[in-house]
Structure formats: structure tokens, C-alpha cells
Image (cartoon, rainbow, N blue to C red):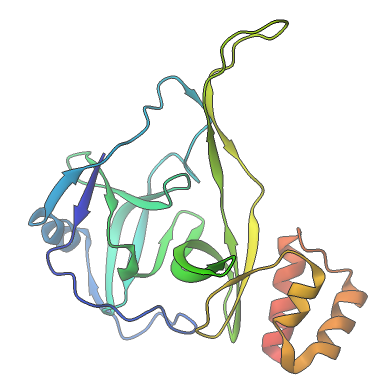
Length: 231
């Protein structure tokens, strides 16, 4: 696989607020590929999947999608897929070449298959990072899923143990809330959840109790965020 560096890269503004599909300069996939044709590419390390169990991808097959950029350009008809392990949005050229977008900060939103993803800031401990998240609900407060896959090295045979091949192991999804333009925060317990709604704590606590909202249930969290955004 090759990583591309966009020749037209400038300082992009951070992803802002709720996404609205309007006022975009609409272009098709040919425009997208023509832009990337003129870029300089350099090789990166990639794991060979031939002898590895599991998959690093959210969905291994490419799906025709749309990329909305922070420059308010909409590119239609791009074959896309998401590499969870590398946290990369990959696309396929008409020649069948698989490339990874090396400037993901341009992505305001990417729709492909059943997936809708954004590249946003988030907190990991006390550090600010950026990455791709699946959008579950958008509004004053937005709900996202962060996917995680780890790579396990092959294990040799040992006493009473058969050898194990190298494999990708999918971890449980994590849920994040983003208040306006702030960095998304991981929801690890009920206290974390309630603190993301400081202006309506009593209403949120009552809603959680009444609806038996659980942290690991996406549908329950979506209902909660919808309720808050309606207040």
C-alpha cells in the first residue's frame, strides 16, 4: 500500500459543529483521482494478510462512497473502506491500486456503505489526539463509536499447546461524546456520561433511570443523546 501526500495541503480548520450537507462544491470521483495523480507518494510498511487470521478492516470490501472536505468540496463515487488497525481511510483507484489518505484532517465526513465517519479530536488520557470515528448521532452533543483492533503475533507450539497463527483481534467498541467543537470524551462509567450534560443533569439522570440506559448499548445511548438535543 502507498501513502499519499496532498500537494495542495494547507492549514485546515478543525472539524466544527454538526455536519450539514449543504453549500458544497460537488465533484465526482474523476476529479478526486486527478488531484491525487499529481501527488508525491512514498512507501509505508503494511502487514501481509496472507497468513493472518481476522481482518484489520471495518468492512474488507470497498464501498462506493462520498467524501466531504473541510474546504467544502464533495467528492462522489469514491471506493472507500476503513482500516481500523492503522486508523486510515483507504480508497481504490480506477486501476485497482489501494491507497491510504495521508491527510485525514481534510475529512469532515465520509459516507460509504452503512458507515458514516468523521475525523475529529478526542482525549486519550490527558493527551489530545485525532482519529476516525463512526457517527451515531449528531447535534449540540454528538455520539460516536471508536473502533479498535489489535494485532497478536504468532505463537510457537509449547507444552500442551498448539501453535497459534498471527491474528487481528477486534476489541469491543468504545463510545465517545462530543460537546460542540470540544474534543470527544470516552464514556467509561455513568458519572462520565452525566458530566457531559452539565446544564441538564437532573433531566439526564431521570432519563437514564427511567430508560435503564446502559453504557454498552448503542441504541440506548442514541436515545439519550437525542433526548438531550431536544431539550
